[in-house]
Length: 353
Image 1 (cartoon, rainbow, N blue to C red):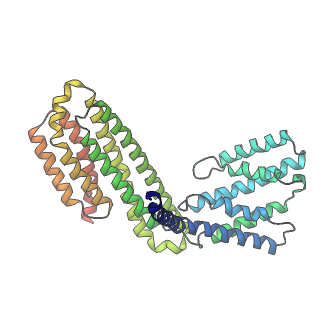
Image 2 (image 1 turned 180 degrees about the vertical axis):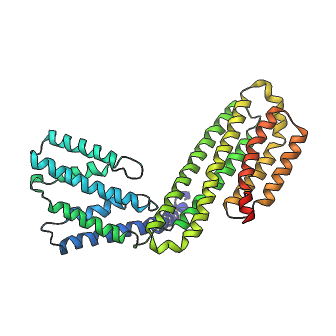
Image 3 (image 1 turned 90 degrees about the horizontal axis):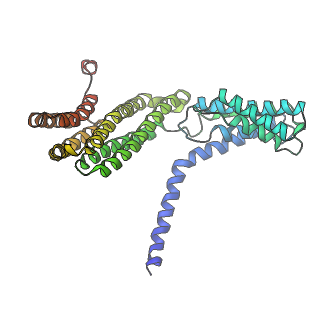
């Protein structure tokens, strides 16, 4: 009975997930499908004497992955397709297909891919495109018409990619900023919570903090990609100023991550020293509240609000804590919080403007 009662809820959950996937991934998939069809048709109009598979292959490989990736990465993938086809045709015009020629083509493809990097990594598309030539039942029959088909597909991709369902950097960066704020907040409050909890708790917290910090760094990299994507996105140009502000907030979060990691590292180091247990017990009475105030300031700043009130409250609390406990351990625990608050306050040049 329980299983039957739960079935409608599970079906509803699957339906909700399917709708969410369609909403988030559907435009990117439709973008690829339309561009593939247009590239195929363009090659036929230009006189392709065989099914223009290579023309259709370019958008399929160039537009895959993160839709926030700048068109520059897509161009590098396109170059990878063209280079791979040229390498395979060149080798097969000299030697018959064999294990040796296959090895040579793959080696050349990987070598060229190191130069035509895509998204900062080795452009594996060069080697993959070379292998596709071998997929033909008569690979030695390939000629330069496969190259112009590839170039035609590249031209269609470059023309249509920025116009068909362009990615929305503003929506993506808003979600990234919210995620960064939540992660930094959890780092601060979680670290304060393990004070005096023993070495194992502090070590586990440090590992969690490092995971969150890496995610914030990845968010900052994605924000930079979104800004670059606007250069090739004429339908989103009006969002440039707002996107820049979101990206600046995420860059701020990236800088704050260093300080929250330092706080977690200090707590881990102090917890491993038995003689500091009394000082950590005293810190446990003050630091959680200060970490919570600092976390609130971080959340307000990254959401675009005014963190001034939370920053002032945290500063007052830190000052009171400094008056009551000037010991080195307390100073070390306060220092990362001070640096977080420093980063959230406007610079003098900002206030003058």
